[in-house]
Every structure is written in C-alpha cells, then in structure tokens.
Length: 176
Image 1 (tube, rainbow, N blue to C red):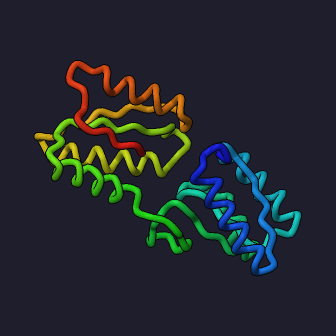
Image 2 (tube, helix red, strand yellow):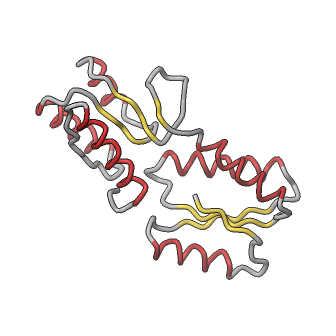
C-alpha cells in the first residue's frame, strides 16, 4: 500500500535511482490479489515495461512464467531468499524476528506482545510471525501473544490496547 511510509520512502529512492539512469518507474498495485497482479503485469508489458520490481516472495506461477517467457528481468524486495534464482533485495524476515525476540529475552523479558499487520496477503508478515512462533516453541519460559491490526496508527493503537489489556500484560511489545 502506498499509505505505508516505508513503502513510499522505498519508491521515492527507486524512482530517483532509475531516473538518474534514464528509466521511468510505473507503479501498479494489486492489493494482495494475485489475479489482479497478473493482469497489471500484462498491462505494463503491453506498455513496454523492461523490468519488474516485485514486493515479497509469493507471486503466482503464471506471473513468473510470463516474465520468464518474455525474458523480462525482475527482482523481489523486502525479502531475502537464495533458493529460487530470482534476485532479492531485503532481509530474512524470519531470522529478523528471532533476533528481536532473543534481544528482548536477553533484556529479561519473558512475556512479549507482538503487534502485526494483516497476514493473509503478506508473506513477510507470515515469515516474521513464524520466527516468533519458533522462538516461543524453543523457549518454554517465553510467553508470546500476537495481536493483529491494520497497518496504520489506528490499527497499532487497537493492537497495543489489546495486548496491554490482558490479565498478565506483556513486559515488551514488538511491532512487525
């Protein structure tokens, strides 16, 4: 979503870099709908798109096959993965949260609340939550509760209030 400041910042930097190389950036949003993503990709290809920057790891096979058949280079952002041959620029979302939970544990926190955005259409959120879940499974003295919300300040407030209203509230909150 363009409403997320981190994504808007990334797009600004991408546009500036591409502009310096005499390329234009055209943005197409699918809002998590994989069929819409494929349709938008076909529209962009018809306009003469020369490369694609895809957010996240999960994309329909039909989209990836289309780009491969047309020999259109692509890369994925906000993810780090070496296994499937598509270049990525980002980070290991699962390890990132494991490191964050380890840090909280080192600081003495045994009850943590995790605040996250929607996970149905966001593979990065699911990977981060998997990292949290793995840490909880590996550490019997650790209690982690998860609290979902929307990716705006209202969603953050709602998730925070939910986390802090528990009978035994967390001693630390981790925002994903």
